[in-house]
Image (cartoon, rainbow, N blue to C red; front, side, top):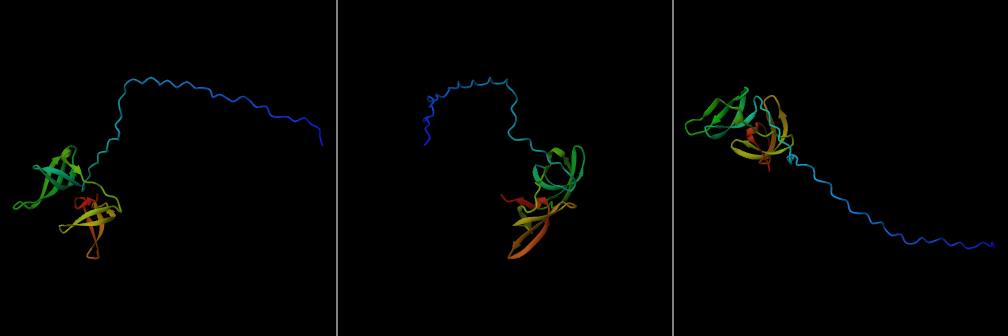
Length: 156
């Protein structure tokens, strides 16, 4: 056996937490312009052969663009009525023309075919004539159609 003295560790007095003074609020900066919550929506650009909606003689009409000018747009449209059934060509103010929505591939839409609306899905977009290839089922048979924007509606 070794004869050594027993050494006990020294115990420090309990530590008292240091009190931190609360922070002072920073002075408010001078009044500045508030930013809008959402960024401005980009205006859709108009192009030839695009489907649009415009007001002619106080009535909303689906049309497509045949020619663009700086402040005017030439459109072709169908005017339904009891006596006045026909297709017309007219020049309208560019500010009255509103583009119809664009659709993505594999988006679910309603498509109009022979005066009936069907639930379908977009499979392809054909750029040359601005049409969408839409597939749907009716009476357990698959159907397809190249439809323009004016014949499509989004499913909400």
